[in-house]
Length: 99
Image (cartoon, rainbow, N blue to C red; front, side):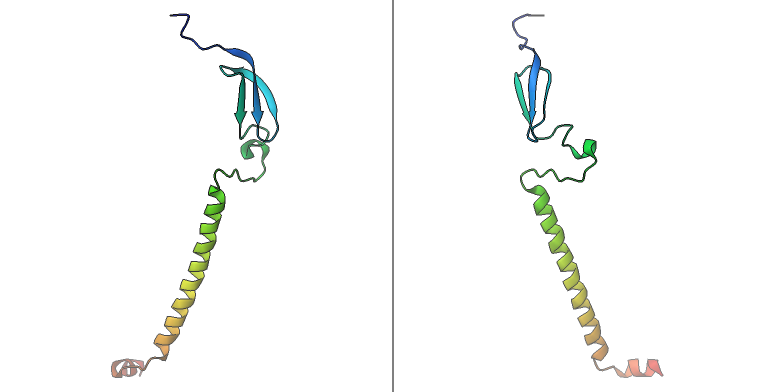
């Protein structure tokens, strides 16, 4: 192996999380910045926390809300159409089938 092609390795590389947690590890970079670490990740903490990357969670929740409203409006339209069908004049065949 050639000795000049390997990157420099830092035994005490500082990892800084967006929550404020810092810890030391080995890496080829002297300082590493991360968004999620073991102190704030929902899997390790047990808390139900959304990790919003570029507003994706908010957009998804908004889509869910719109879908619920759409379901309600479809159900209302269906009820209205059913009532309209019941109020329509019956044909001679329908009247004879009832007797």
